[in-house]
Length: 394
Image 1 (cartoon, one colour):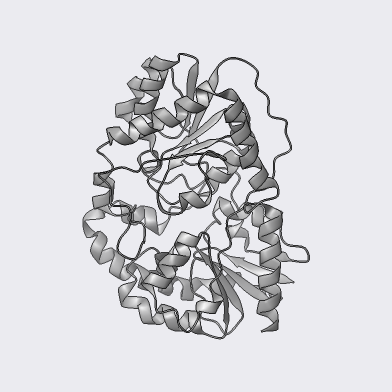
Image 2: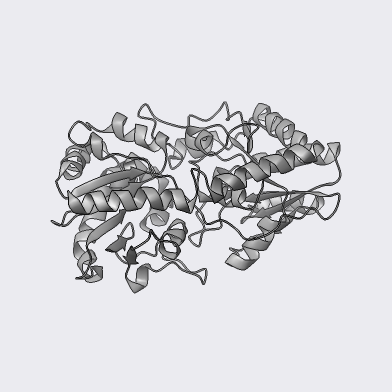
């Protein structure tokens, strides 16, 4: 079965979360993609439309209205050049397909289908396209994302097509070692080649620094490594506290080494959960993350980590449960660090630091979820192969 994997826009490099799909496809499935959409291994990335739009935030409301139209116009002008004639089906990354060919689509949440722009103006077009006989399956990454579809759209004509397909990462072949008395915390804002703007703040970097200052007072054996570009105003603090900062996107090999050396993964982010959480689990790390949106689908408290309280100052979603992390008002709201949230992070991390047996048990449980559980390649491929076969026969 030949399936064409199309990035969010023809010509864009595929997000790194599709690496495992290409490298470990379901049995009997071959994914095709154009040369320009191959996953990047050299750290380069196209300057995306989203990055451009983020530079002109005062116009965000107007841009959000027109962005879906611009995406559609660009798609129609360029996507045919990348289509292969032997493709049995299209697997679309977060965008609608308008050609009379079978297709399936995945999505982070509902507005991903309109380039993370305004859904209201294009709601009927989205509904009609998803109801089309050519759209075979709609695959949100989380159950929380599935809920945004049902709250944001009239799904009566395509509700049976909606099925959660969780993200997955490959299992890691290594033996976890505990070589000395230090307890190493790891914070990765992004390991992705696109290296999102403002990722340090959005992924909880400010809260990590505030928590670490307290943790070091309690236990000087605790160390912290940050894989992120750190804003200038925090660099002196990092230097004074002995925090190891890796500002550049790492090669996959170097990032692997950081995960293998770590003991606890700290991710008090303000965004939707991503594959970096699963990567940490695959390296047998207990995870401390914020209890927002779909994070509880990945982290089960006291089983493979802890969930901490969210910020009191941030409104994380709108009334349709769509995350607001790209909105100027939201970015402003998380600039004020919630000290109650920080204290909760300190409490949860301290427990893991002071209880090595529990820390290692939770790490093993997380790794099991990646090896054979809900977020395993085996489970994802089993579900995808069924979906592809059903789609081809319907």
